[in-house]
Image (cartoon, rainbow, N blue to C red):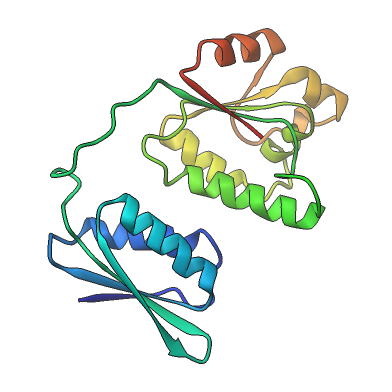
Length: 195
């Protein structure tokens, strides 16, 4: 049995590290993840059930929980859903969702990091309007965006938006594009996520 200590680790790290640990295990083997919040327990449970594994959680006391995931089938044994076309993620602002701006920035950073772990990676990440700030100097997502580029994702930022915000010289990842190319990429996509 393998134990993965995720105490004190924010979402989505417990799920991502659990998935990585499960890849190295065969049917019948168990991975136990230690977490310190109920949301992580819920997220790990959902992930395990989606993957077809058995899952059992327990409260350990002092605000800690264990989530034991027993592998039921390897990735090769499971029937994989067919791809439904290339994925394009369009990001038009520096935050995710409506409400608190600080929380929105944290959520968007976690979302972009999570994209580095999604298989397959998005084919395109398109940034425009306030989203242009995410590909430029000072962004806390540059390392994750570079990881996506290294995995084959095309990261493009609207040139008119970079000019409007005086950011063109500060672009740090990806390339400059235009609204026609953004519209064409989105129109030809199999799936589009708009942020």
